[in-house]
Length: 432
Image 1: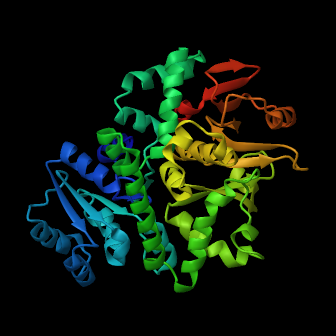
Image 2: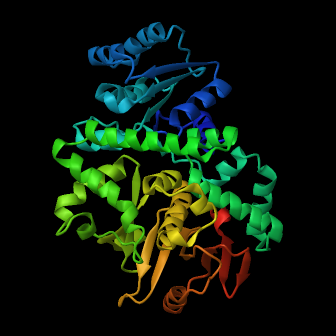
Image 3: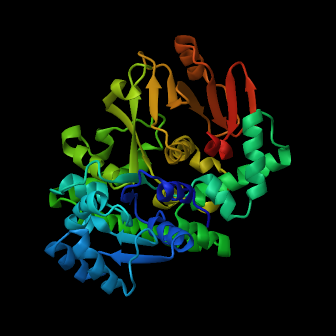
């Protein structure tokens, strides 16, 4: 399956400023698969080392982390000659080895001709929680996310549809109504399946939503196991409480995260470490409110006001135990959940496209903009609707207050541009 990360990996390989690359992200997003497929296509050979399954590796790195020492031993362990610039060296589950991570510094300084990519599912947690000697400034870092809806469409063989969607987005012209309806069907399928590659592959091969749900439940179970294995003993229960409660909070009219909904009388001091763990692991992301719409927006975020979204829509549906047909036909039984689910969807698409997302509320709380991003140097408000009813009083308040160059409405409505508002269908969010 095509993954956009391949384009980045090719640029990394050919860059004269290339450093050892750390590819981080949540479990099951396809890091290892993408790296190995890239290595097979663009290198003569791949030397793969997994620190979770090969106990000999940690012993090797504990002795000496000089490249001159390591390369002959790694060649022996992999059973092949590691050649400068022609072999891709892959360290997997590197969060289990502090010494392997530290060795990247010496590869960069003393042996830059070796091409190294390391992958870690819980690298952010390991580096933050333990006394890792992180090779600051000596590595390139890239975060990988689940497949976005464009990659999902391509996996379904819809390349022509993707090209038409991009054209309509750029020209602000409606997609033919039959194609628009068909694209909305694919969008709803994506809400059920999500972007975990194994789940997408299962759906492409079988079209069976029950088999996909079984895979999703397995991934959720592995996340719970990680919360126990890679977490402080005192934080395990709190982390699970927060994770279980996210879907509840997304069903509220106001999706701002509230500690008291996790536990009666709950406070930030009790749950902030749990939220940090979930964020560092890549399982969730926090979107902060900005108190002022100014650059740089990070300076004006309110650390006490935020929303939490999960990293994958399919896992969200599985965790909520929502039947596929309820989402495919958008039944009224899930009306309370639709708004939060669609917000979550838009956040995943924006995040995977590299945007840092925020939200805005008017000082007196009468208006709220779902997302505010910086696009091409401009601060742009984004209003999100789950249906084609695009009346948005909040956007009117924002426009009157800040007069942005243009605004974006994401909904079930077809493409258009009117009164400085760009209308984008939900299935086309990847175009942003």
